[in-house]
Picture 1: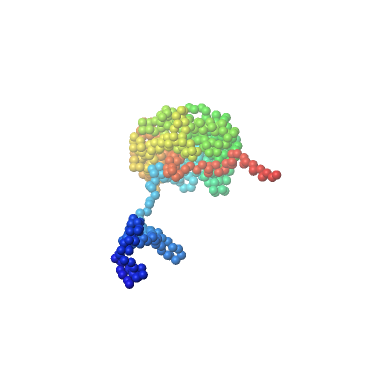
Picture 2: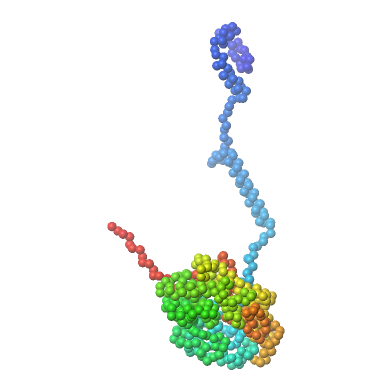
Length: 545
C-alpha cells in the first residue's frame, strides 16, 4: 500500500511495519523532542534554500594554454585599446600639417662674427695682397693678426722685411689696385721681434692644419727657421732705419721670445722651447715682474699677457711639474691678477661713463685693446670651466668665471651699439654705424677713372658717406668721454686695422654659440706634446713557487 507524506515526499506503507496511532504516539514519547527538532530544522532549511554548490572557476582553452576567462578578457581589451590608440596617432600624424623645427636664430655675436670676417676679404686685391686700408705695411701687424686667428701662411724663400714703408705713402689717397708708384722695402737683418712673431704665427698655424701632415710639416719647418734667425740675430725691427716706430713701435723682443717659444713647443713638443719660454730670466726681461700701467694689456707691442694665458693653459691641463712648475705657477698667479684688473670692482683701469674700459688710458683708438682683453677674459673663463674650477681669487674674495664672461660681454656689447651714442662701431652691424670709414677702397667711388695720389684727396676729405660700405670693419672707436666723430679724415675715430679686427673676431668666436653644448677643446693644441711623465714599467711577472 502506498501513501503520500504530508510534507511532499512519497512513502511506502507496509502492513508488516504498520502500527496504530496509539502505538506511534507512545514511541514518540520515549525520545527527546529537542534532539529531534535540530535535524528537522536543517532539513527544512535545505528544502527552502536548495543544496549548496561549490563556486567553480571559469577558464578559456586556447589550445596550447588554458587561461582564466577574466585574464583573457582583460588582455583582449588592452590589445584592442592599444590598436585603437596607435591608429588614432597614425591618423593624426598623417592628417595634421607638419611644422618642421627650425634651428634657433643665431645670436648677436654670431651675426657680428659673420660681418667681422668679411673685413679680411675686403683687404685682398688680386693675389695675396692685403691690408689695403693703409698702404704702409710693417709686417709686424699682419703676423700679430695671423697669430690671434691661427691663420695659415705660405713658407718659402725670402727675407724678413718690414714691408713698404714710405712715410709719404700715408698722404697718398688712391685705390689699392691703382697704386703704381715706388714702394720701397726695408730689409731687416737683425729683427728678433718680427722673426719670433712670424715663427709663432707659423707654429700655431701648423696645429690648425695638423691633419694635412705635409703642409703642417712645412709650416713647422718655416717656423723653426725663423726662430733660429730670431735667436741668432738679436735686434728690433724698428732699428732698421724705417719709420715703423712712428706707427707701430716695438719696445722689446723678450715678450716675443716667450710668446714664440710657447707656440714652438706646442707645435713640436720639443721641451727645449718650453725650457726657454718658462725660464725665470726670460720672464724677468719680458716684464713679467715689472707691473706698470700697461701690465696685462695685450697688443701688437706686448705679447707677454697672451703668453702668460697660454702657459697657464699648459699648467691647468697637463701640469708638467719640475723644472717648469715654478715659472708656470707664477704666470698662473699673474694671469689671475690680470683678470682681476679687468673687473669693474677694481680701479686698475678707468672706464668711460658708458662702461668702456680704458686699457690705453684715454688715448685714441681704444677698441683694439678692448677686444683683446675681452678675448683673453673669455678664454681664461673657458680654461677654468674645462678644469672644473668654478672661479678664482682676487685677494680674499672669490669670483665666479661668469664674472669674466660678463666683463667680455659688456665690452663687446658696447662696441656693437650698447653705448651712449647708440652706435655700432662694427660697420654693417645694426642700423647705425660709421659711414665715413678711413679706408681708401671704401671712400673712392667705383668707376673707370684712375685717380692720382693727390687726385684722390678730395674723396678723403669729402663730407659724404663712403660710396662703398666696407662691411665688418671695426673702427678705431670713441674717445674717453664716449664721444665719436664720424669723419673720414680723423683716423683716430674712423680707421679700421687688421690687429683690431683680429682681436674682435677672436672675442666673438669665444662668446658665440651655446656654452652648454660647446666646450673648449683641451687636447688638440697639445697633439704634438709628448707625455709629461715617463711610461710606468710593466708589472712584474706572476710569482711562482
